[in-house]
Image (tube, rainbow, N blue to C red; front, side, top):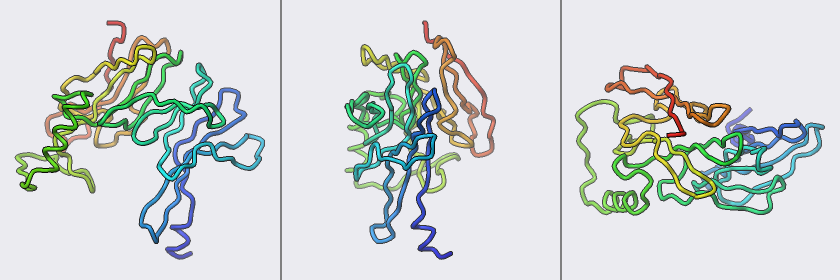
Length: 233
């Protein structure tokens, strides 16, 4: 096996299954050494073992498929936003349109609400103008140096910066979003040992549960705790 073989391998990402178990949707990534980039697409395969079929296969990334039984729709992320489509890929509908984009999401059992995370400036929340203005000022500034007075300022190959991954609730009917961790100094999911599985609805949809590390010194802590939010208030 050579490095060329490794790069030629298809990488399977998130998987979601219909309630009756008849169909499996999955994200698949392929990489090009020549172009030095990869592309993710969404495919479907029947549980009888028949050949996979492409559901969303554009030249831009489509990822994070999640079947929503209450809507009989497939939800996914495209251009950093949540979309819905029919199981065969038709009837595409954009759900969100935030400058900050969507990192991950979960639909409620009744299909009426969506929990999602987005990397925003805490003082901006989801306000598009506020986030885009601060991004623009940072990009246009001639000063590229930064002063850090404490750890944790870098996560692997990414600078932590001033943004935080916060948790939001979207009402699909009104398209109104509510901030569940307003102005938080911590991330949801946590930077350390966190994933898109770290937040969800309660079975009755009345509460949201999420994992967060609220310790002040994250560089020396993996003290992730579970928290709940009453969604009826």
